Amino acid sequence: MQFVAVFVISFLLGSVPWGLVISKVFYKKDLREVGSGNIGTTNAIRAMGKVGGYAVFVLDFGKGLLSGFIGMWIAQAAGFDQALVGISTSVAFFGCVYGHIFSPWLKFKGGKGIAVAIGCLFVTFGPIPAIIELAIFAVLVVTTKYVSVGSMAAALACPLLSLWVFWGNWIAVLFCSITGLTVFWAHRGNLARLREGTENRIGSKKKQEN
Image (cartoon, rainbow, N blue to C red):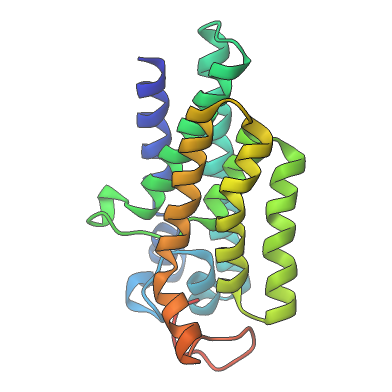
């Protein structure tokens, strides 16, 4: 029951569409009708500028971080051992990212999960593996000028890092791997545009979503 509670709470936290909330409340526009229509950080920056876009990132990162802590707190309050705490925080990671990508408030559509995922991983994986994830993302964005390349690489690194963090705890590895691969799947449109040579680089004229 504790794991069910963790999933439900983290899914609901993840489902809050901060990009849409900020665009409507502070910018009097519907982010879904601007640019690519995606509610994530990249489109938010393009549609609302750096202040609005970074606010979306902080809030999405924050709901991921909070979900991870909730997963940890519930497990610790239940007296779980370290392995079960790992499963609980992995369920929180899974729930929050799925809530963000498949938000019930947006007809099960949403963002692509990078900010939320990295926020939650600071608890689920711990600071060092999460910083590695963030570094993979940042280095590839800087070197390729494609946000999507960094995002997909970080998503694919998640199953590998979960083996390092949770070796022997295969349930935790499974939840983390499914979540990382789902984030990669959410970028399938970006992958297609990369293959076609139509994906946006940072600083290029706005054409489509990263």
